[in-house]
Image (cartoon, rainbow, N blue to C red):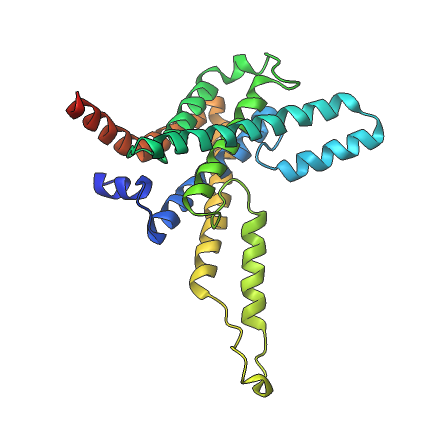
Length: 250
């Protein structure tokens, strides 16, 4: 992957193209983590809607121990999103090239820990849940926050609910019949380019999910190491630019 292209993907100066291409890559990574992680921890770690709904069900059924399980995942996701925001804002205030690369480097480091020590961490209890669950929920929150900030909430990568909703909205526009009697009003038109992008995001998430599930089934926790390598490649170039700038100032 050419250095200039990678620098373009994670640069602090954003374009619609760089947002799309980075979104496709991170959707693949998120799908792989979510599906492979399910086989590891028996829980989807990006689906906060499902976790919150399950907590409500467990309260109604009096299964309070399971409520705390959900709370551990929810708080970990929240902490990941907050950490991502702090890293982005810190880099922005200090005019760093790795404004959006820092959270991805942290995500890569955590994936590395999961891949190398996942089996050991699964036996350690964290905040109401095993550390592995907390780790994956934190990673999902971290990634979702960074893509949300850089795309101004236009792209999500850790879940496809919003993506499928947006596809449905565009399909509704496409199927809408513009009556000739309403010629004085602007016609309803679907954005075919947006549909293509949304379908690409959903497709990358699905392909990543299949890849992650197959990888974990055959090689276990270490299947996350290539995902960590992808993130290092994405974030490494702006981080290296920051290092060179720091050395010049010294």
